[in-house]
Image 1 (tube, helix red, strand yellow):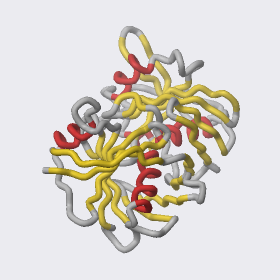
Image 2: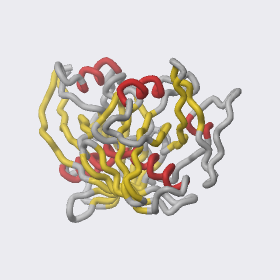
Image 3: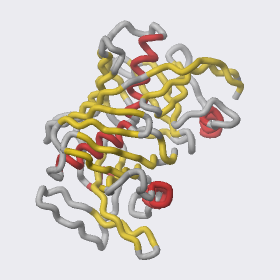
Length: 286
């Protein structure tokens, strides 16, 4: 079958976007992987599917599939920004504020006149159960700010401490002195597939630059290290704020560009602002 696609990117996190508003797309995991293949396909970190609204309370359905595995996942913040630009550019809506429904939550997306998009990501959840983390026979280190840091044994006598955060998808955030030299390539896959995370996890490596700035690298579940991770940026900033290390508004520097993250604490939603751009369009035989 031939499939029309749009290649987009947000802060270097790249996506293949598919329109399923006119007819359903029933692509297999293998076809999703073929689309995302950087040598034989289009190439992308994730595949985004735009669907008709599943109910009257939202404007569209928003589905996300990891490029590496073809599996459907819960959330993608950078993808959400591209989603807004796509439906606007394709004439699927003339709204600048949209409500969309993902696998497990509802998002509000706002397009600014300068083309940047703000996503209401919902509040963070610091409960280990929210990231499907097995706490059997281990205890966290208590911190003065009240956010526990959990030990993860990575083998060869190496243990790291992570903050557990759900942004609708699971994150394990550790602080590092320098993200440029952080062991993302070696520790990332071990954390992602750690036995204590029953559904896997996104591994974040955060360097705090000041109370209003961090640098971040993320080894994403099912995708490997990406140039940027929107939910990872939200999780890292939320953890830093809960630890008393960051102010409510923080600029996150990733390899793909800068993201603005705001969280006022408590049950307030995390707001993420950043760019979204179309790269090219085409058709591919799957």
